Length: 97
Image (tube, rainbow, N blue to C red; front, side, top):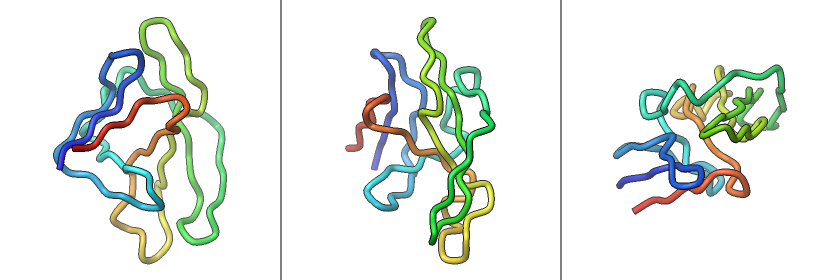
């Protein structure tokens, strides 16, 4: 299992170990290119996963606001994605093999 996330050919996440929830690939925090990510004040709530927090991603001068999300404290049953990051497919190219 291998997955990458990229923007215009620039890799921002790369891992051999990830989780899939609701059809989204969640990347472990250590797999991210940290310098591309900035925490935002945006939050949403999933009734079964909990409160999501967001990142804006900047790559090669392109800024993609709130294009990635993660659950800092997921609800019971979703602990495996704590801190893992998922991306909006309309903004970030995610490929798994």
